[in-house]
Image 1 (cartoon, rainbow, N blue to C red):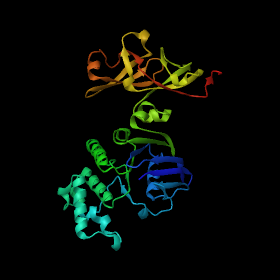
Image 2: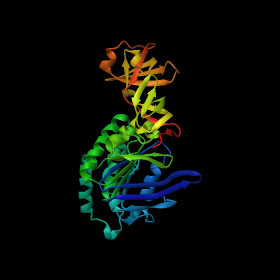
Image 3: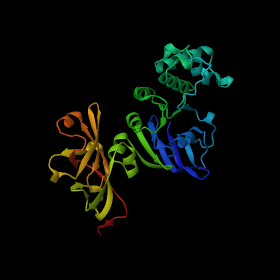
Image 4: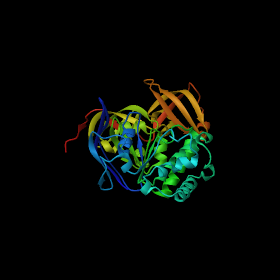
Length: 359
């Protein structure tokens, strides 16, 4: 089933949660809504579910207008961050709950419910826990049971609100890989909300970046990371150093370096901000080939990677550089030393309306 959101707006008193949002989600797609707290992503998920009514705009499931439909009429499965399992029910009864409360004429028989619940527990790889209670399970197990319960009603759309937010890092990583494999198996149109960039990039088919109630960019993970449309997207997805730059005729001048900026080929002269990923800064021996010099303030060894925290010797601005451990070990880099940095690549955003060449 496809989902089409057309010109959706939602306010809470003076707060604009959604500001003219348009989005189409294709059948069988797994889409991540990503953004900081208060950016509108959870509000949009609740509008799709029918838990919030938009002030303006329409929601379509396939070609059918679902805007005014009740939650129960939309056939959506919802998985919350904190599981929302019934503590007094066994795992089996939690998964069976949605089937048992169906109207009598559409309610399956006990035999069909048993078969279906056992099948779902096998699907989430927890069929051996049917007679346990939620308090006897780990956080990761509880979340998988919550997902099985959402799937029991055979939803047309699966919605997940920060599904792994309450779990520790190791369990989160294992579960998101499991969710991706599960989605590939069941091919159910799914939308999940997260503020975790790595989670969104690893799990989703497409990422929708939100800020202040608006969509900043939509694209496949590689596209939004490698080709961010705005400075917000660049700064939000991963770490980025921000440096003053001057742009002239498609060239970005950063310190002593000149880097190609073909997206600004028509700019005669303008100031801009250069965004450089920590792994795109190299330590070089020749100061004349470097963009600038910096003082090493702190060294953090993270397994196979070493992160250097530095300050620009010209203006004291904080910088980060990431090096492979082998490369770090080959250099004499210590706290307090001065190193020369060259940028392999950068993305420049013009700070103000720039002077353009006349065609």
